[in-house]
Structure formats: C-alpha cells, structure tokens
Image (cartoon, rainbow, N blue to C red):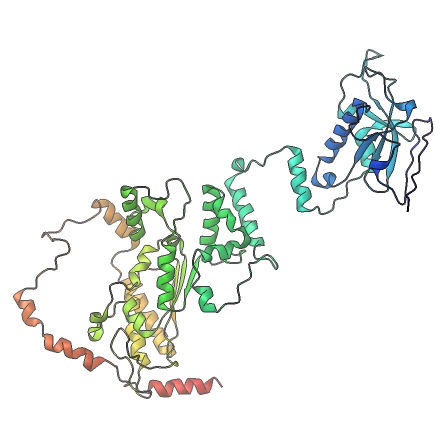
Amino acid sequence: MGVSTTIIKVSQSPFVSVSLAGSDPGFSSDYNIWPIRHYEENPFVESIRKGVLHYRLQSASHFNISIEVNQTKNPDYAGKTNPLRPSFRIEVLFHDFNSRKLYRICRPGCDKDNGARKNCTVLTNKNIRIGDSGAYVPLYDFLSNYFPCIQDVVSADTLYTWWSANGKKFNWKELPTELKERIIHFCMHRSHEPGNSIPKPSHSRKWWSRRRGLHELTGQLGKWSSLLRVSHQVRAIALRLCFVGGSDMAFDKGLCIVARSYFEFADTIRRLGSYYQLSGPNSVPSDDRTLALAKTYKRFPKIFPQLKQYATIRHGIRRVHLQMGFLNYFHFFKITIGGFDQYWRAYYVDYQVFEQLPNLTELIIKLPDPTGRLDNKAAQPGPPLFYDQDLSCPRILHRLIYEQAAELLAPYDNVEMYGFIDGFEALRFKTLLNHAIETNKFTERDLQELYAENGGGIELEEGVSPSIPAQATETEEKSLNTQQLSEIPHKFWPPKCRCTISCRQLILKNQCGNF
C-alpha cells in the first residue's frame, strides 16, 4: 500500500507558516526540503543550527527538546546573496520529528553604524531574525514561543548526552571538601532506599556473616562501593563516613562488629586487619623498613599515632558487640582462678586486641545464656564447668567473667554488659567497673605523656634478656606447692551451686514468670 505525500506550496509572504498534522512519511523522504548539509544548502542554515543548539544547551530540560532545521527548495527564498546583505532571505523548516512543521523566512539582523547598514558578515545568536506574526524576532524568542522548555524529569541518558554535548568537564578537584562529603553522603544514603539496596542471597545467616572481603563496608555503600576506587581523597571521605556514621545514615553507629561467637570475632578481627585503608599516598609497605613500620602501627596504634598512614580497616572499628560461650570468655579475659591459665592457648585472640582499636567508642558484651544447655563437651579446651543440671552454677561462672572484665576494661569508654542471671549481678558489675575506673592509675593521656617524657620507655634497674624467663629465688621456690596447685583445678572445677536460692530454681522461676 503506497503512502501519499503532500507537497506544500509556500506563498510569497515571508511570514506565512504551515503546520502539518496527522500521519507523516518521514522528513527524510520529504522532497520539499534539502537534506541536512546538502551541497546546495546555504551556509546560513548551519548558523541557524548552531543557534538552535546553543538554545538547547541551556539546560538538560532544554536539551530534551528535539529541534531540527532544514532548508526548503523554495526558489524565491533560496538565500543566494553572497555576501550577506540586509535583503538576504531564506526559507527554512523547523520541526521536532513529530507532527509539527514550522516554515519560516529567516534573515540576518545587521547592525547600524551612523544610520547606514553594514554588511552582515558576522553572525551570532543575537543577530539571526525569524519572520513570525508580521515581524522579524530574534531566534531565541522564536524558539521560546514554539519550542518552550517544560521543566520535567529527564532521563539519565539525556543528562549524559547534554553534558557531553556541552563540552564541559566536572571539576571535582576544585570542589570544597565539605561539598564532596555531602555528595558522597547523599550517594550512600540513596544506596539504602527501597529498590537500591543489594539483596542478600538466600543462604544461612551463618554463611552471610562469614563472607570474605570487606562486606562490613560494601554493605554500607551498597551499589556505590566503587567510590572506594575513585581516588585517595574520595576513598578517605567514604571510609570516614563508614567508620563514623551519622544520625541521618542507614548505619548511624558507624563501623560496628557484631560477633555471635568467639570464632566469628577472631575471624573478623584478622580479616579486617589484612586490608589497608589506602586513604593517602604511601599507605602500603613497599620494603622491609615500611613493612616493619606497618606491623608496629598494627600492634601499637595508640603508642605510634604518627604511623597512621599504615592503618587498616580494623583500626576504624567504632563499636563492638561481643557474644561468646563460657570457656571462650575465660580464654578471652585470661582467667587464672582454679589454675585455668594452664589451658590458655597462645593463638587465641584475647582482650588485648582492644588496644589495637584506637577509635573504639563503645563495647557491649553479652554474657552466656544461663538458661541454655549447660553441658560439658568431651574435647573442650578447659576443665569441666558444670555439675549436673540441678547443681550447675552459672552465677559463679558469670562472676568469673565480669569481675575480670571490670578490671581489664576500665580504660575503655562506654562499656556495657548484659545477660546477668538477676539484677543484683548487674548492679555488682557496675559497682566493680566504676571502682576500677576510679582507681585506674594511668589514663590514656597520662600514658602518652609518660611515653613522650621518657623517650619511649623507662630504664630498668636490672638488665633483662628478652625471651629468657627470670629464675625464681629459693624463697619463692619454697613457697610454691606444686601438689597443691595441681589439686586446685580438681577441687574448684566444676563449681557447685551454693546460692541461697539455687540457680536452677531461679532460672525456672524466671521462665515461669515470663509465661
């Protein structure tokens, strides 16, 4: 079936416009106009196109408007005058690739010099005139009337094309640091809006919590994780936001470590300690000397803050939520009662790891659940802890943990502990912790001043050879009763419940009260 083509005969009036509506066979097949950049096309048309492009480049909304310009084949307005004169006239077609076609007579707007017109050899956007409604109006006014800008949402592709066509570059380096931080903050905030967050795989929670890599950071950044690979400055800003957090962020507490077992905590600490922050130049050791410096800061970040360029992700941890079993807590806090020190393991991560977290602001510890299954395992790394079900005493086991923790954790701020068997134990822990804080001889500032005044150490009165244990004196040897020490574990472990109200009865009472 053929498609009919209507040939429009333009009248001689320079201000007559014709608009076509309905079906259109396409502008490329319209033989009433010259194709774009045809060899017979007048150069003045290209000047009009540049003016139209300049109009569209005002904003992304303007650029979203499709405007094309073609010269017609009207011999009466072919624009053959060369050079340009005030009498120059040419007919062009403005269209938007839809049903609108606007035929207009165009001419150059020549300036006057002492009443005499000059040759219009220099064309700008301001001196192109379009015939409309009985007068010649500037090109911008004509486009604003017939191709108005609608302030509507434009697509990402349009934004990219508009920015590329502008020939501009985004000068990110010259932006203030505060503005850069706000931009990155906005990106991180958007990553957790509905539809933008990364869905968790349908695996068990155990697998999800033991993933490799830096999922503690990528979980905060979401789809904006590539910010960590832009530059040192952008990475430093993104890491600082991840570490510190904020009230208006999805992860307002910052970089938090939630460990539901000892092995999960040890794995997280070791894993995060193997990634450097890379927030500045020379952040990775490149030889034996810098490797020694990096290891020194990794172990003693509070003593050598000047080496913070070698900081790892572990050094950015702000909060720790810790949960372990009884035996793991005994190893973690280095319990010695009942000869438990003979069960220590050298490879165990203990409480001293908190000294390697210079930015730690909060520490929450959950005691083992006294209502759980209190059974001794066959191959556990320690002595038996529980009598039979009726005589087991989780109160004593809790006390061994929190009494030691209150003394060891006194130098740290915002230490909390919960999961006590009753309110009396919780009050007792707070009392012990406050007393330990008050009697703490050295604060962190005092230690720093002492280190600075003594050049990094204190001279010992007697020489001590490293890695060689000191020999006990004869008096000390006589005071040691090896037979008594060997009998202590068998007498103390497992502790037998001697509470006024047995732990078993108290637990059953609390459980019945909850129903």
